[in-house]
Image (cartoon, rainbow, N blue to C red):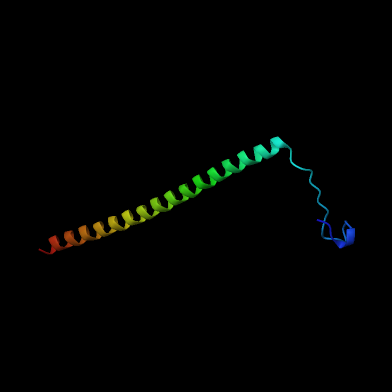
Length: 82
């Protein structure tokens, strides 16, 4: 990238970027690294999905336990009245 009419320096916010072509092994390795990265991302998404499902199940179980405790307390209170 070249801007500011070829001037590169503190007065120009742009810079000149030159890259040499990637070697053959670099091209092969880049493909393998990309495959590994894609695999890791899919595993991460699956882990997040499992965590979300587990959190939701935990919340439901906690809510059901609270309801059961309330019912038990009400039943105990009714028994005391009689």
